[in-house]
Amino acid sequence: MSSSNGREGCALVTGASGGIGSAIASALGADGWPVGVNYHAGEAAAGETVRRIEDRGGRALAVRANITAPEESELLFATLEEHFGRVLVLVNNAGVRSDDLAISLSDSDWGCVIDTNLTAAFRTTRRALRGMIRERFGRVINIASVVGPRANAGQANYAASKAGLIGMTRTVAVEVARRGVTVNAIAPGLIETDMTEDLDGSLMDAVPARRAGRPEEVAACVRFLASEQAGYVTGSTLYVDGGLGA
Amino acid sequence: MSTAITQEQIQLVVIESLQTFGADPEDIAPGVTFEALDIDSLDLAELSQIVHEQFGVELKGSDVAEIKTVEDAVKLIAARA
Image 1: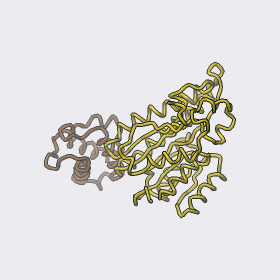
Image 2 (image 1 turned 60 degrees about the vertical axis):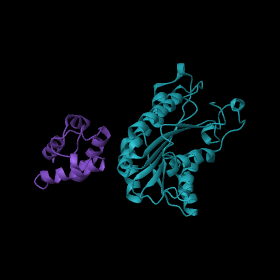
Image 3 (image 1 turned 90 degrees about the vertical axis):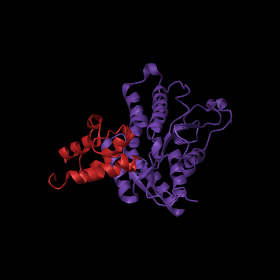
Image 4 (image 1 turned 180 degrees about the vertical axis):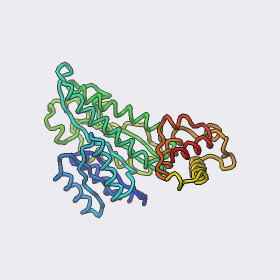
């Protein structure tokens, strides 16, 4: 099966050296998309993701870029356009946490999380939309979180960024829907990754499924939203959280 | 650059773009408003991209807000080319 459907273009996954991003990149590569595997610090992990895609006959390119820097974000797109053509599937996955109670949260902890999780995602979305509206096809998939719609003490910055991402998703979806471009969010709950390994184990009691999710379960939803078959799904948020947000 | 691009070339690109956006070719004329052609803000944003790619002319959001007719667009692009 090839969900890229013979289109001249590629997928870009930001923050693809991490657990969820790597799984998403692999899933899109398996669907026939050439994949831009963006990373900032995890060069070895990004290289491993590329190898995994290539081993299965796919095409991928690891591209280092700090997406909070506008010029690096632009260079990331220019590099992918040169190698694979327009970015037709954009997965805004890069995200950071810097937790503290709001009363103690520093301006830099606030700014860093908003810059990475929300502002950088807006910038990549704006850039990708140019090619998508010309192509009359595009898929923007924002990896939000169940935190945002739900409260989580110690994560005011993270919650604000992810709730912002969901708001951005809805509005941009409405703006570009008539060009065949869909914009959706996925809200993972507790997923087994490096980013969640330090979280309090008692959180699991709040998950109706009584287990953490797997990165591949998030990737499967991205794979669907990126597909031709999901062309009428836009502005939505898909929860992948074992019932946590229900 | 400015001597290489004629008003006719610009008009051709604008008209082709409007047709791509769904405007009826029979309705497109210099004095016709974008509103009458059912051309919306997203169409004009895309027209700005096309104009930038074809002629290297950058139209800002405030420029686009000023142009109401096909003729307005052609004249503005020609003035910037």
